[in-house]
Length: 274
Image (cartoon, rainbow, N blue to C red; front, side, top):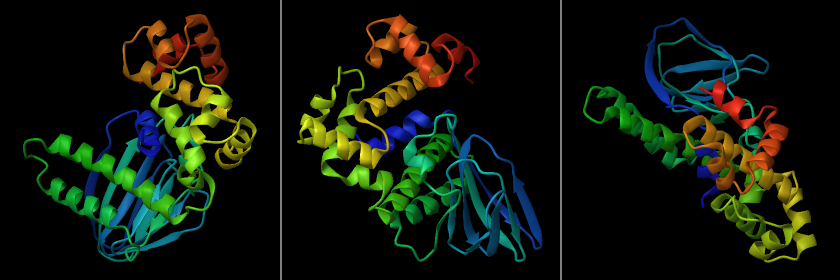
């Protein structure tokens, strides 16, 4: 199980979208805060992106700006500019710590060694040229998903020594995370996860908590409820089936755990989900 891809899949709440915009100087565009991750790629020209509560970030041709938490921002330019912009609807009410630790604006400069990001941007740009061709909507969705994964991978590759980047690369903690994500319904104990990691119970618990930021069983419950929330949003499975998929034999016990984590019962959550 790939933890990074799994996190993105569970947090997504709708289809991503993108567009290319040609702007004549001088220009200004405002983007309100929203429950989404967004990106801007400078295909030509230059500009400055100003988050609502942060310092401006200058962008030149080839730069990519990634906003993982839907921060409101404005972009201004004093030169003719072509931007490729896109957004992903995400459940930011419970952001995964893998995303939450990123800065409000992630800048990937044109000179950064990110061949996968560049390739995805190029394919996306060409696909937007032929948006009326058969299969274009499916191709755009697939390319946007790839770009999101590549952006996250580029960040974590550049920050491998800290936070979740370190957790994913740690042989022991990474093995435990993959096990939890592969089978969240299993009756996991700290000892069983320690065995997956090849460590004693106590050593594993210390290492996991230090890197992930919460104890093993705390993360297990958090992830189970995140998976359950996605199933409630995106399927018609009865509550007992959702409960079973995340490791609860009792619908009542599942309901209590879900309400404790999300503040509302599962049925109410499903009723108000888009």
